[in-house]
Amino acid sequence: AIQQLQTKTSASHAPETANTAPMDIFFVGSAMDIFQTLIGDLDTEGRYLFLNAIANQLRYPNSHTHYFSFVLLYLYAEAANQ
Image 1: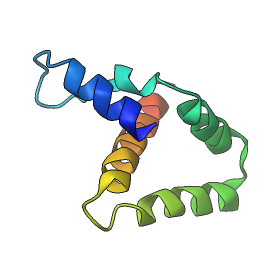
Image 2 (image 1 turned 180 degrees about the vertical axis):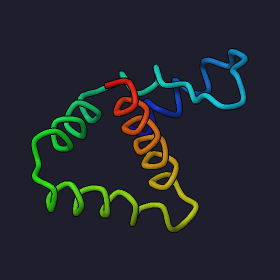
Image 3 (image 1 turned 90 degrees about the horizontal axis):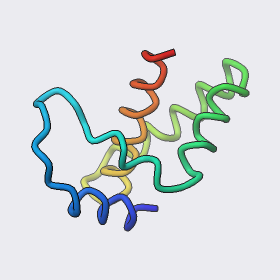
Image 4 (image 1 turned 120 degrees about the horizontal axis):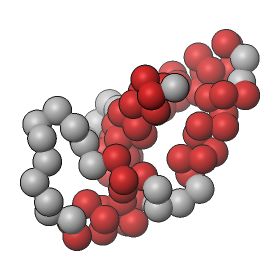
């Protein structure tokens, strides 16, 4: 999923506004569907643990940090739309 994300990101160098991320790159697989289903179906404690596990991946500059930062941005953008 990370390689697909990087391929989509490097393939599309379209100019973007400063405040928006290229959200269409997240439609590359079922990972985002799984994340959205977990967010919607878990109770409050499960949601807390799930988001805490994602936030714990944001510690060090590596490919996991890059991927999960976009995952969090996408989940919050989708929550704002709903």
